[in-house]
Amino acid sequence: MKKFIKAVLVLIAAAAVVIMVSSLYTVKENEYAVVMQFGKITKVESEPGLKIKIPFVQTRTIVPKAVQLYDIAPSDVITKDKKSMIADTYIMWQVTDPIKFAQTLNCSIVGAQDRTSVAVYNATKNIISSMSQDEIIAARGEKLTSLITSDANESIGGYGIVITKAEIKSLDLPEDNKEAVYERMISERNNIAASYEAEGKAEAQKIQNETDREVTVMKAEAEKQAAILEAEGETAYMQKLQEAYDSEDKADFYNFIRSLDALKTSIQGGNKTIILDKESPIAQLFYGAY
Image 1 (cartoon, rainbow, N blue to C red):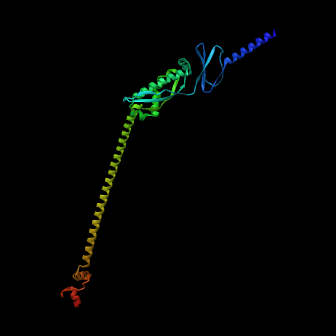
Image 2 (image 1 turned 180 degrees about the vertical axis):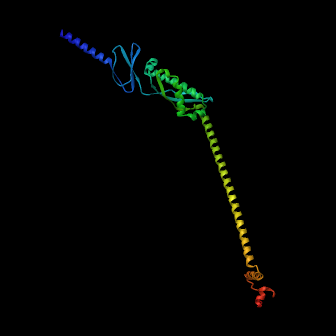
Image 3 (image 1 turned 90 degrees about the horizontal axis):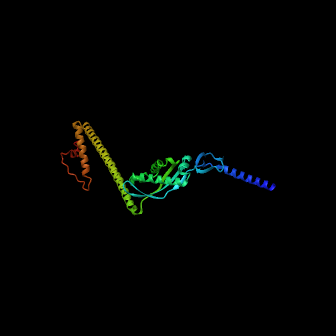
């Protein structure tokens, strides 16, 4: 009898442990716990800590709060100008409404990845097809990421998830036309460089022409001022001469000095012989006429 009672007590204790284990669960900081009963959601635990549920009747499913990363397979896309490109994209998504997530996707991470990858692929195809290849290259980065992310989120609003970022990590050309595109891009860049060089030369020539014109104007002005000063100097010189020799005696003296200067100049060579007319002012000097 004692053994039977002991065995019953052991069974009761074991059952109590099983019930306690089945009724208690832990919610972590970065997750939700969705509690369901007979296929219906009864509550969602979002605060971390030890929680309790009805054992064997209620079940709980853990849903991540953290942002999830999913790398989708590269896909071919066609631009507005009918150019083929290969887009390699990754997705960052997050559960924002665990109830909708449970109701629509049964808390399936794989299901969410499928929905987001389809949404991002369609958004990428739509955005790329609305832009030319040059526009796509110019928009690469945050602008293109923002367009794709916004477009993709419009199609997954009912699943309780949101795409925080859908970014093309590489947007490449198919091998069969990559070389032709590269050559065209090089040619375009060379044309742009030639245009810049021509503009630079034109601007340099314009500056040179303006400088030459300014120099010409300044030189002409300087020559004009020099001519004016020279004319004024000649006028002043003639006026001084006129004042200095305004009488007959002064004029004769001036002519005499000029004759001496001329005589001095004429005897600079080796021949010192001078023949003078007796009536000349110099000869008269030697005769004592002065």
